[in-house]
Length: 250
Image 1 (cartoon, rainbow, N blue to C red):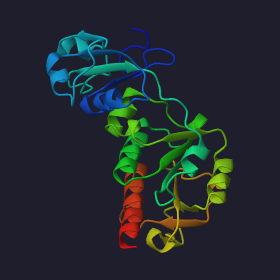
Image 2 (image 1 turned 30 degrees about the horizontal axis):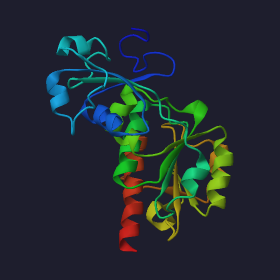
Image 3 (image 1 turned 90 degrees about the vertical axis):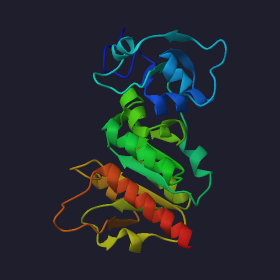
Image 4 (image 1 turned 60 degrees about the vertical axis):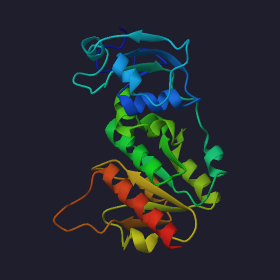
């Protein structure tokens, strides 16, 4: 198998997903081109709905599936090869519902973190996530597993120039809030009544200087002094909850 155990990518232009939520969501997504499913009969029986009669399935046992995925990956009887989703462009999401927040990631490269952020974005009804193409992970089995199906739900916009994208976000009427542990105000105080774009940087380094300059406000989460910072995916989840709470109260 080209790509080898644990790659999550079988060959150029193909990704491999595993696990019930990731595979089921990909199978249900009409925008996703499917290539082949390896599965146990129990794994298929646990899917919501039936596969089309002509769907390419190769029946396998648990040990066979384990050889197709990352070591100790919980495949749950399902492994799917498919094509990455088609590109989504920034203007497509900026013309959507402005009450739904945007999540913008500056050089967050860990697929576990990006997957978890996608999951939170789906849970709190975010409009999309936006990343810089060269400094973000590709679609992969690891990312899809962490996203638990959200990769198929939340639009993911990849841009060449993140600073320029932030200018377009501002022109569309969004208030750009950069999450910074040293921010002068709390996120609750920074939230406006209108559209919001939350910007989060990589763990450790945070947002780059140029990205900070493209924020309308810098805000911190009010965590205890005993803890220096939060994991970026946890910070995204809490920030999205704060936006959702503001919307509910409004």
